[in-house]
Length: 313
Ligand code: PBG
Image (cartoon, rainbow, N blue to C red; front, side, top):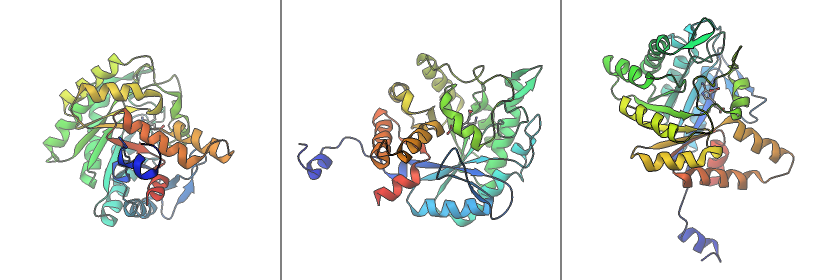
């Protein structure tokens, strides 16, 4: 049954196609800006107009959607640029929705890219405060929904944020905006290149007070259950490759769509080794995405999406 590609293809159990992928974009202020991110070769800092151009290319490749991260003009203690209607992300969402008719637009909802201290929540007395953060996240999600986002993706790991966002959206007639929840997000070293790309390294301490301990899987199932009870539509595990067992466990614990985030560090390792000629990039990327799907992910967020879609055509 393995003797030819026809046979292998006939009995193949898992297939990854571009329509299951979401491609991350990093949006910066300005016009005509397209700067390669050194820690993520092949990915760019894009102004809203350039993000719209990039999104159009992504749409043409048959990729399902994009997820937007914003680097604001200025940061402050409460991340106010993050929930401004005129912030970089709402501007990019509007530009992309004007340019693309089919592409899904998701937005990352988190304060860390917008706060001067770099934490994902409001800081008081050196501590990240859960409950005061919820209202700011809800405001940010609303600003993204008003701009035209199809999905909002809270990545902060505060307790109760899915419920707070759902309530805010429903209250303003955005019942159709879906919540892609970063339900099981681990405190991981694999976010290193992203923090350079998003300029979101915490100025003190780390995120272990709100992100999950890499040793735990039962806790991931609990986080997923709570997010679903609060109204999440898709639950995500992040990172992906070091947590395939978690993806599998989440897949078996619920009947909702499961997403996995193949994060910046996973991408950077492949790129760096491929540049040295130590691995074959296409082969390793296909194997990686297939493994994540085989573990049970319906949706994969990945920086490899454009390359993968090109290889698939
Ligand atoms: C924001 C956020 C992070 C990532 C996605 N949303 C960084 C973090 O939590 O430190 C990481 C994505 C990646 O590494 O590709 N909270």
